Length: 337
Image (cartoon, rainbow, N blue to C red; front, side, top):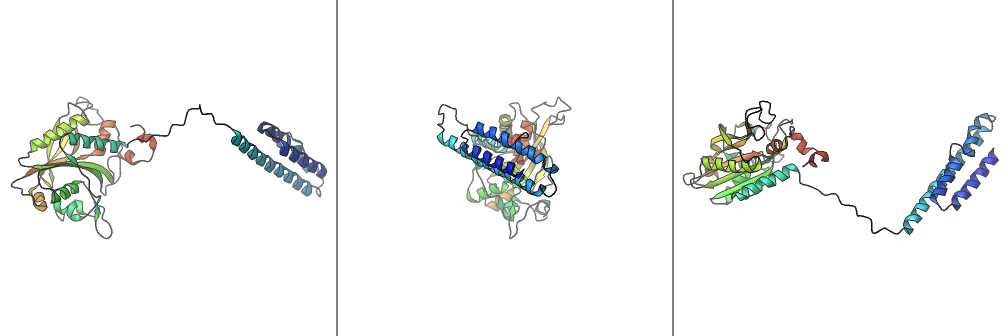
């Protein structure tokens, strides 16, 4: 058996070395290593050999099998490389279109909102996400014992500073360097130590607005919000104010938009829960203490400020019921927009 195995090995190696076609090489593989090959038949007969002959015969058969497989792989690689080197590309074939990117739905909505406010006469400004306590709290008339300043509500950084909890900090920075009149919106990312669930996240996006001039009133605020809501949600959008408290505005309100899906006629509406109104954000007239902190004369100037949760608007517009999807890495979500 040893002689026959060696003869098969030499014969097969010679044939493999001489072959010049991939199809012929595959036929040799089946002939010499297939289930019905002579080498496989000899390996099946190893158990019938005397015990003292089995180790040598088994080693020879295994070595032959390994040698043939290595020769086949090397020859296949050589033939493929030769075919590729000699191939002429078909220039008439269509090219491969590269994957095109697209804006994230939050980024797209932020740009849309910024564009709407620009048409209303506002300037888009930006500011740092790492802030100090003065700009984030003190200048906004937030007292030292306010819950928002607690460690469980705000991300404080080692060595001082914090991650801004609102883009109102940009308003302070603009007023510190710009005399009235001022009309700005500040889109950006904010951070709060909220438990992450379907409606809350520790990182979220806002766009906040500020208008300061002589004789600015609450009616100007409402008109601005109505104009924005009718462009971003529905031409029939109405705005409702509800009394509230914010340390940096007085009077302060929370404002709602009328539901553009059911208009209050569907008690099972998943957006407004049948109330006909959708809570959007907070607003109010700028507190005189805020004007004093930036050097404005509260006797000469008035102003309004408002905040909008960008995720909130996006969830209403697209029918999304989980805020966590916006920061998910699954591209199947973002490719829908």
